[in-house]
Length: 243
Image (cartoon, rainbow, N blue to C red; front, side, top):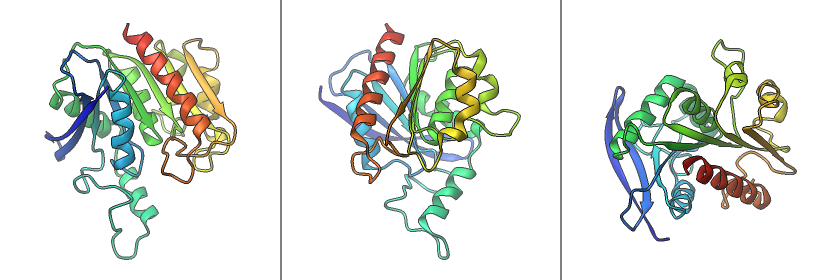
């Protein structure tokens, strides 16, 4: 299916934000996917993934979560400030965001894209976006399923850590994790994984040899088996949840 995308701008409590909206080229009443980015930001790989998902018959709405630092910043095209490495710059972007700010950005993005307040939606997130997708699943009645690929920050020592509410999750969640992830190891997720282990509607797939960022074909950590398996499981879950 042919797709099209556009960048629209919308207001947030912290200034204007760009939103990538990717949809089938053919007009239709397509269900929405709220996509939460990973740390490197909206970049060509993000556009490519959103287009692939849109070709399945979805409107994919991707807020620019780094907008508080500038418009459409990404790690591959943004020069770090003097005295900082790219990694330090990106870590600064990540740590400056709160869960509430990210969800606020999601709200504004959906509204700007024209997604109805009462339409069922699904959500997917990568790295830090997986935590955001989980939050969306638990806090937004419209969300009927969520997926998180090479997730980050699913368990921490804060009073609002996702693992604390995970045992009460009632909607489908799919997680894809690589056993070679050197950024967010399985051990770091253990409290969350133990919390959801008894839940039949939560699927956790561990991919042998896959590292963090296995999704992106142009990345050195791309892992075809993990990316393909996660894609098939996620799209199957989304289709079933929206039927």
